[in-house]
Image (cartoon, rainbow, N blue to C red; front, side):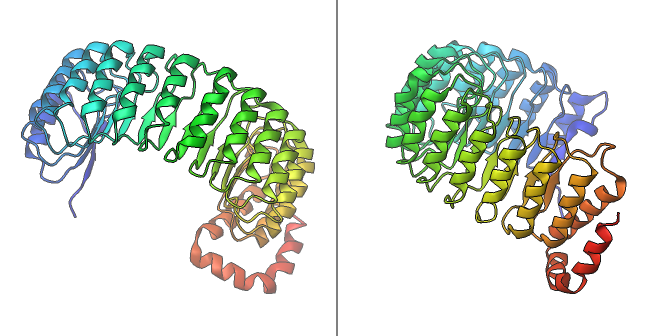
Length: 447
């Protein structure tokens, strides 16, 4: 069978340019090519570009984290004007800046094959973002655009907004950490009232405040295509959460919502918990790093008793403690939809583990549980182990593996997880449970 993927990271020598050119010219099978960080300079990028003029097989080219700079971007832009096979191009963190980005964007005005472009981390400003926006109006093939960790600012966001009103092909737009404040975010969100194609929007790591709460609400109510929205690491507080929560009771398309690292606190969590009682589309909710205590955890737990759509809940780096853990654990007795629960770093002790272990015995849906960086000792780990003897669903369990937990308990936990990850062994475990369970539990009480 022919290889379809090649990683140059461990397959280069000092004569990189010649090797790369020769490889691409003679290639008859590789369709995905990945160059390791720091391997490619402007000269190598020129060799790659020259070879791609003749190469008609390569579909994915990853040059991320190199130093191709303007000269390399110029060579690649020339190729994009004529190449018809390349579909995925990753140019993140290559110091191509505005000048190089402008060349790439202009070449894509004629290209009809590229569907995925990553130019994050290149210090792009609003200047080249305007050229990208012009591209989006004319180009009908590009579906994924990653502009994260640049400097497009509000002016760049406004330019993109104007193109989103007319563009019908883009489904993924990443604007993480781009110096966008309320003005730029408002323009982007308003464009989505008319845009019916975009499914993923990342506005995380910007400077969005509660002042645009009505704009977010209006977008979530009127837009029926957006399935994932990332607003993490902004300036979202209780006031905006009330409005967002209200719109979630009316929205039927959003599947993923990231609100991590904001200032939501318990009152905001109460609002979104109330929304979860009515919302039937949301599956993934990230509320990490939001100063949530046992009060907020209890609100979420009450929502989980009735919600049947949420599958992933991320609550890491809060302070729900043992009381909040007990509330969430109690909800797992009745909830059958949640499969992923992250409680990493939440000041949970062995007292909280008591309730979790009881829930794991009864719960039949949870497959992932993260309790890392809590205060679990041998006593708590033993309770988890005893629960895993009966549980056949949990496949991934993360916890502190330091010296406080003995080796035999850690190895026994991993053994049970290995069984749960294997379908055949899991079936046998279920069949054998009644016959050997009492004996095994007696043994576990002694270790």
